[in-house]
Image (cartoon, rainbow, N blue to C red; front, top):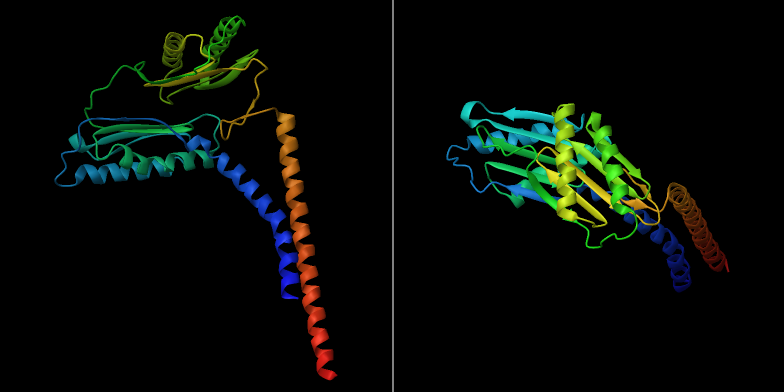
Length: 300
């Protein structure tokens, strides 16, 4: 009987296990907004025999992480005078507040691993960034190019340039609130300015970013550039712009198919759960019959 029960029990577990693994993959896939894009670390480290800078930096990080649970952008200062450290974080405009907190809370440890105890640093993830600098640190231009990524494939003979230009123009005009996503036919664009920029400064920064991405990426089917105070990205889709999952930044085939897939997973999960219950009830029944059978054997 033991071998028969084991043979029945394992197949009963297989379906729920597959469903759980599928859900796990989906959940972990949604964390793409916490992936590292780039880091910028000052060469000079803290001269900190008294530990003042280290403590101020620790306090700064804790404050920024705490504030990210309430809003998507914030600046703060830790310490006084020459010992002061100024920092800020910003989350992408389409992230929820919990996603913003999750994203920002990963950065302090990453700063330690990637930069160490430097006097200024910036760590950019897909969904957020955090930066800090000591008081008096020399600033670069707001439109300074920090990082770029260009797709390896070139778009040719498809009207791509005109569609991308029109999409960029709409983005520049639509960035009044500091964040924009949209598309022109088969070109999708996204842009964001740092939260403390005025509308005019934001527009000027994004215009510089547009010129930069055209120069840097040419006719690449995708590209993104990060300036000190803003960033933009674009992607070209010959078969039409897919639905973009705002939480993960992932592309999905379309809203209808994405919804159908979600429903199918939910239904499959419920069915698997019910199947497991039936299996357990069946096993319980077998054990009960076995106990009754032993009792009758004892009477005989």
